[in-house]
Image (cartoon, rainbow, N blue to C red; front, side, top):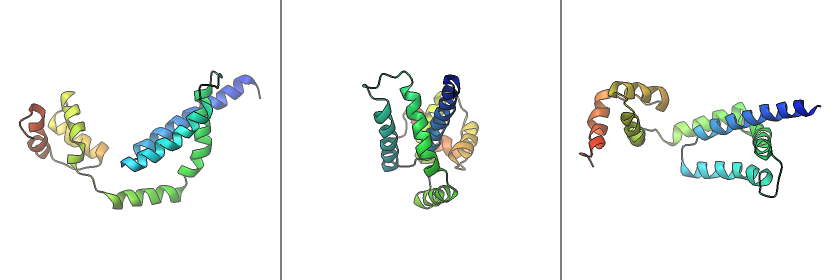
Length: 145
C-alpha cells in the first residue's frame, strides 16, 4: 500500500468516524448518557492524540480508530432498535423542552408558523403556532417569568 493510499484510507475512515460521532451525539437525551459517550470518545483522543505523540495526523488517527472500534458496536440493528425503544419509553418531550431553541430561532427571524413547522420536522413535536406565541412569545420581551 502506497503512502497516498494509506492517507486516503485514513481520510475516509476519519470522516466516517466524525459522522458516527455526530450521529451518536444527536441521539443523546440525558446528562448521564452524554457523560458516558464523551468518556468513551475521550479515551481515543487521550490514547492517540496526546502531547507526547508528535505525529501530524494524530487527530485523524484518533477519529479513524474511534470509527473502527465503535462502528460495529453502535450499528447493529438490534442495538438501534433497543435504543429507540428505550428512548420512546423513557420520556416524551414537549415544546416546553425546547424553549431556549425557540427563543434563539425567533431572534434569527423565524415566524411562529415557521417555528411550528420546524418543531414538527426537527424536534418531532406537533405544536401550533398560537401555542408557541402564547407561551413562548412573552419570554422574548421578558413579560413572562
